[in-house]
Image (cartoon, rainbow, N blue to C red; front, side, top):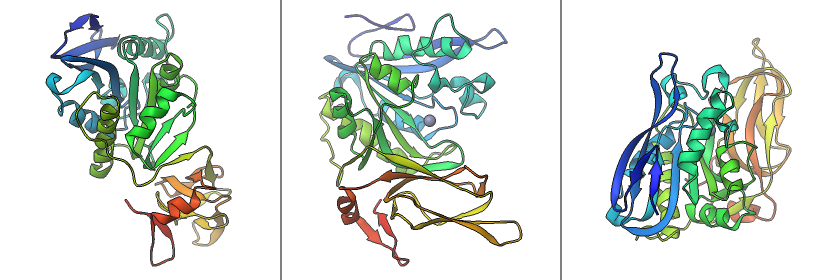
Length: 335
Ligand SMILES: [Zn+2]
């Protein structure tokens, strides 16, 4: 069957570099999103790999680059559609958003007659998600936060479960994702999609990038698209409940936890002090679990998030087994 992206036909056994026009700047020049399509000589599934839908989340840009330069059509069964920068406008202006602070990842599947963001999303959805069977969307924490590498996936779908497990992170957060995200809209349209979350904005973090590259290669191996051997994680925990722990008081936070640390109900998470140097409150964990994200900014208002905890119950002992205990008695997942 013919595969066409941005009006260009991609033949079996070829690599095509395509500028996909998704909008126009007010200078009347096109907003082009660069797409690389690697179409294997042999038949197989079509998989999309996308990054920087939030224009400031850069680890995925490098993950896509490394994956797409790692395969020739001869080494691939099926097709890989690679989009290192989905939000071209935000990427150029160093922001998460499209103009008007619109979050592109809340407009899928888009609408060709809708607002600017909906039209942008509609073209990406039609051209990139449309022909695909599976997808991996790459993210980092939002600005001022950092995340432990993990997968978010709707584990009630068998196809999603298959690639979420194959990716090979220790932690999988089982959730359908907010409505109108690329992941939720693609999965609803029958294109099983997961997201990989790792690290922070505005940088390339070598260890996060290599975890991502390894994970995508694991997914392609699991779908029999490559001859790679899949690597299994040390353990795998599917988390159903995660909670944000918030500051009650405003002040300067001294955060006492790190991503990858086990926290027990009642443990100290952050000491909040006022500008006179006095402690105004101690934030304690309301639950037992693994820290999967923290804020990196010490200034907090009442209600601001300090950390994100994946709740562990039956699986606590499993995770504890793979932790080291540091000199303060804290249990930390080995990276
Ligand atoms: Zn994101």
